[in-house]
Length: 347
Ligand code: PBG
Ligand code: ZN
Image (cartoon, rainbow, N blue to C red; front, side, top):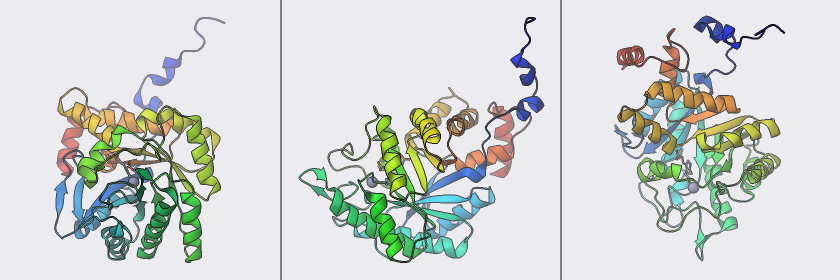
């Protein structure tokens, strides 16, 4: 063979050719935007740890979801900050609770937005735990009853997809049965199937939902980050129990899990690009060490390349804007000035 018959650089010589052979591309229509609902009206308060993301009263939240939809983002993932917390976490299943109100308003005012609701108790319990603590341990089966009640109340409010987040044993089966029994047999479940116990959630608790744990940690239900085979068992079980979409969380440090999950299960696969991943990029960009938009696209594309079908991300709106205005400067290597200029125009 004459040297060199294969010159891989032939297909890299300009953006036109690079674009033709590009294997993975981001698209806003696979993004899911997390939103935080708070009581009151006219409230739009930036979350310090998640710049560009806000605590939104229901009226403002509706605007935000519609704006996201206009950018091509089809779905939102709802979290609620209740007026008050209690030991029963009653705010989580109150038909007039914050998430339930937000769901109803969204379905009324922007019916085309897919409304996904996070099902957990940790924003609503005084302890910040995901259910009931008995002798220092998160009690599985009594907490399951609580989470099932929350699921049904979300369904009754009009949620389009429920997303059980607690990593309790048997939760998907319990919720599926409860939903089916109440006439919601067509309501899909997006399971936080392989959710790791991770310090990357800290900005979410501390500033996103104000639900820092009063004591202990979540290591008796969320996964140990040293494990990979176990994640496959978690995902397999959730599928067996009726999950329609499975999720790996967090995303960036867990792309090996994402790749394996895509290979082993032929299911719609979501990743959650969590608060700490967002905060790291934001901090580095603020310090002038990394270009925010370039790193954002590189990070999100890595999730896609690993096998994620859906990406839950606080970057959703910014990434959608950038993708819409992407210039010839090259995918994944967006020129900072070009973008800043483009973004300044839309702001
Ligand atoms: C559970 C939930 C958590 C996150 C999303 N849903 C925290 C947890 O269960 O430990 C974290 C998301 C993030 O860090 O962005 N309600
Ligand atoms: Zn929780």
